[in-house]
Amino acid sequence: MIKDIKSIGVFDSGYGGLTILREIVKVLPQYDYLYLGDNARAPYGSRSFEVVYNYTLQAVTKLFEMGCPLIILACNTASAKALRTIQQKDLHRINPSGRVLGVIRPSVEEVPSLTRNGHIGILATVGTVASQSYPLEIEKIKGTSNFHVTQLACPMWVPIIENQEIETPGADYFVRKYVEMLLTKDPDIDTLILGCTHYPLLIHKIKQYIPSTVRIIEQGPIVANKLQDYMIRHQEIDERCSRTGNIRFLTTESSDLFENNAEVFLGKRIEATQISLD
Image (tube, rainbow, N blue to C red; front, top):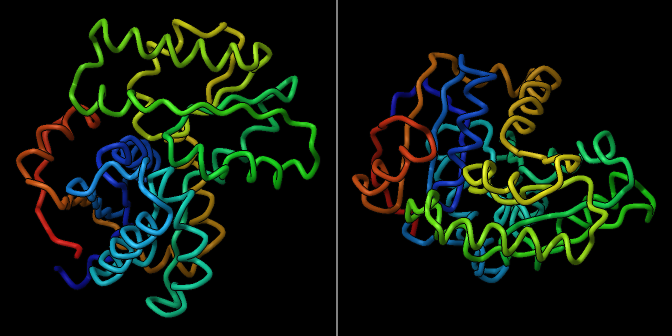
């Protein structure tokens, strides 16, 4: 590792976090970034809290060891099942001056300004839905019980995306199926949170099956803008992050496989390095 490179770490269980990284780089291109995908052990969505926490802690520890002063958990499952424990239990031990942020809180903070009737829909992985993280965070933001939150897990969406079958009849079937199931549970939904970083790749299909009046919350642009604000408010972190516009990619799977699939998310070819976390 180049010693003077202090990258912003971006972690995901696989490829979805690349949609977050893509938007962050658009807003903050001057910083250095180190992306880590735990592709060998993905997906995290159906794993237990303990397993997701342990895997995420390993990744966070690795990124801190590689010099990252700040780490973004660009994964809803990791944010739901591991972020709070790491912040409260582990951070003081592994890197007291480091910071770890997630993607759920920034997304939820947008809800009050977007919803008109308080009916919020959430499409996410099995693990994120089971964690109840979104309803709990929405309740904290509002401070009352005026919001009506309806969640639905979409277990087929990630495999469709990662197998590059987005433009197939099967993709249309499962997008329509889950969207209609959600709207059947609550026809009054006016704000929809895409609670998985893979899902923006399906947004053009999702829009075909929801009313035009429903507002969609995409995490990438929101997280990017919130990070920009965070850097302004936390100069002690901002000053520790290097700025040469360099982006590096790490994966726990085959680097060739990662490079091929990453192109779907980033729209360009990249080079990756394979590492081990366990």
